[in-house]
Image (cartoon, rainbow, N blue to C red):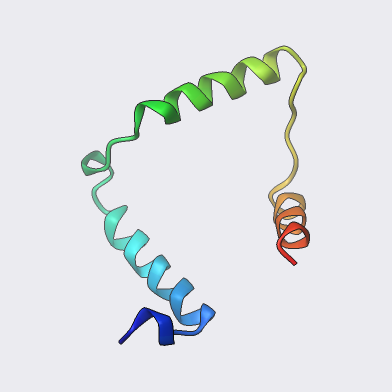
Length: 68
């Protein structure tokens, strides 16, 4: 199947299947160095009250609104 001919739903289903397969062996997936740096920066921002948390539902709503 050509990816260009797949529907959005089919593409998302394929991504989920790939992620499920890849996540069976988390030790085989190394995080890049930038990811640790980003996490450390986020922790510092929260500790300094420069960032906070929102619920997953609120985050999804914001992302959906920004992409429409």
